[in-house]
Picture 1 (tube, rainbow, N blue to C red):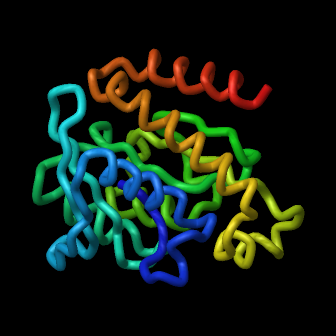
Picture 2 (tube, rainbow, N blue to C red; picture 1 turned 180 degrees about the horizontal axis):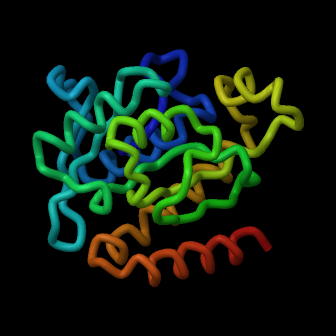
Amino acid sequence: MGLGNPGPQHAANRHNAGAILLQQLCGIHGTTLRPQSKFFGEMASIQIAGQELKLLFPTTWMNHSGKSVSAVCRFFRIEPEQMLVVYDEIDFDVGVTRFKQGGGHGGHNGLRDIINSLGGSKDFYRLRIGVGHPGHKSMVSGYVLSDPSRSEVETICHTVEKAIQVLPIAMAGDWDAAMKSLHTAEHKICQ
């Protein structure tokens, strides 16, 4: 699940980091996200590490992402621990990307809604893409709904590519190795 807001005016916003990763995955695998009204979003399916991976972009707006995620989970009988939610992380600098399993929502309204829609379950995997912090909490909303600078875009795209490269390791069930590989790659590109 890649989080973001629908519409061309939001396509390159920091808040759409998760959706940007989905678009990259679709491009690599020669497919596109297609509207699925019963899932309140756009979906595609790809194969990674010999397994089918369902890609979901909720078009419900970020703060209501749970409506879409829970509809997909119910229909396909997906348990929270089988999900990977990709989203923007303001507490990480641009260029920092981390896998994590479980935890709270950290103030991220999309995550908050997903957790609520899953009956409080926090056991899903996360891929947090660093977009930086504007400096004060009163500036966060405008910041995440704006586009990053050109140099930030290049760095974010590079970290998204690295995350995509380690997805097969995660899909094979070795999340620890995927995390280690991603974090090691990050240190190499940031030096």
